[in-house]
Amino acid sequence: MNGRGSGRRGVGRRTLLASGAAGVALSLSGCSNRVGSVVHTSSNQLSVTITTVPDDDDRQVNGIFQALESNLEAVGIDVSVDPRTTHEFERTVLFDNDFDLYVGRYPGRRDPDFLYELLHSRFKNEVGWQNPFGFSSIDLDEQLEAQRRQTGDERRETLADVLERTVVEKPFVPLCLSHENRVVREDRFDGWDRSHLADGRAYLALDPLEADDRLTVATTDARPTQNLNPLAAHYRDRGTVIDLLYDSLGTWLEGEFVPWLAADWERDGSELLVTIGSDCRFHDGESLDAADVAFTYEFLGDLSLGRAETPVPSPRYRRELSAVRSIEVVDERAVEFVVDAVPDVVRDVLTVPILPEHVWRDLVEGLDDETAVTEEWLRDAVLSDDVARVGSGPFAFGERSERDRLTLERFEDHFSLRSDVELPAPPVEEFRLRVAPNGASAIDLVDAGRADATVSALEAHVVDAAAAAEEASVVTSEARSVYHVGFNVRRAPFANPNFRQAVARLLDRTWLVESVFDGHADPVAVPADDETAPSAFEWNGADPVAPFAGRDGELDESAARDAFRDAGFRYDDDGRLVVNY
Image (cartoon, rainbow, N blue to C red; front, side):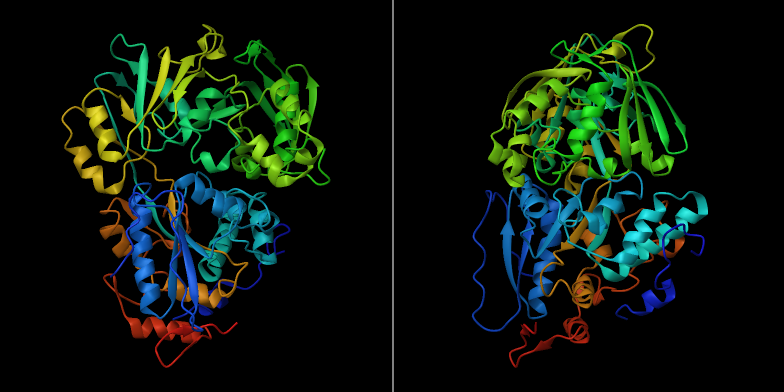
């Protein structure tokens, strides 16, 4: 066992690392849901398609795409482009798995356990941010499972093995962690730096500095005005609005994990007893009790509620539920979980939004038989925006105008407003979300006093302008987003790790950070910051297995082509990389 529980060490680190390999771009600005692909050549040349989002949706993604496209073409590969709006991109990649490779942004990370959902083979046929690459490795699965049951040095050692395997196998290529900068008005509210502003409950901890019954935030992401379903993975990058509409058993406040809907919890071995606060209610006035909690976890594990032949798990909160072995109602206010993970992982179990059983069960039971048992149709029905927007959170749905604004109203019966509860409560009667076309416009809204903060992290190219704003101040939060290139390993040639390494050598992370992110990001070799990653994987200027084949962003075409030859590929007389699979 080598001190690793049930996980096997597999191939040693030294052996694994030793196995590694020693222009013109299409503008995507203003694209609609999909632009026709570039026509493939009729020769035997290798053709690949890059799925991405347009410049208007994410300029950083677009900048990475342009560099990758140019360098793929430079080594003789025919490149097609599949640009889609953000929610269509995520549906294509996360639901349909209909891509060759993509440039994207993994939206959040707090604990290294996020690698469990990204890479474990049990998820490769599921939807959402669960192994969209289709990657499979028995050794890696065992390591991912082991680190969920380990603590201290043992866990760190296993995590090092997990990160090393991602470096060598490269189901995806992590490029950088983007800094999260936002602008705020410090003359109207205080406390902006207390919690991460991607977390909705951070806005509850603000202190109004003047008589104002409304808190307005600007966003460049219109999706919350289009779909408020908490389970819709392709509309939910972050849980900002969902945190305000729905309660969870526990939550993060000012860097600490504390009971929220739960009054308390107690763990004894694998048993976790959670007691819910008294007299909690949903926005429609119905009481919230232990049965709703148990139903939520049952439903997230199987959206069909037993009607389908095999369970259809929710594409959201899959990792959080994976540590739960069972849940049982003890009494009206208590549930008992049986969990199989260390406390760092179990905390995430308690962060899922609690759903009203009387709303969601009626929805599923009201579906016709064919819809209820057909996974794609069932997901479409359950993840739609037609579901009643009934939660129990500190704010309730008010009104909206698609792609323009969303208004939430303070829920006056929320437990946080009681005098005997020491938790942050809604500081205003109304929370308003305003959609801005871009980061510069969002900054203008705040600087002019028409918004109090930008809830979306600013694009890198406007951060310097934000710092120069007259009335707004810049607040920087912990980086969570991992920009990366992902491969569909279900398809040739991306099933070949040597090919993936050769593609990785086309990407100069340091240059991308400076030229695409204007320095407002940190290049990484693994999908973790230097504080989380073991010292062996701290960024030292190059990928330890597939360093950039060039210098200062300029590709050495000869060296890059040699990398593809070393991967077992060949070129024709015209210098085109040809299909050999």
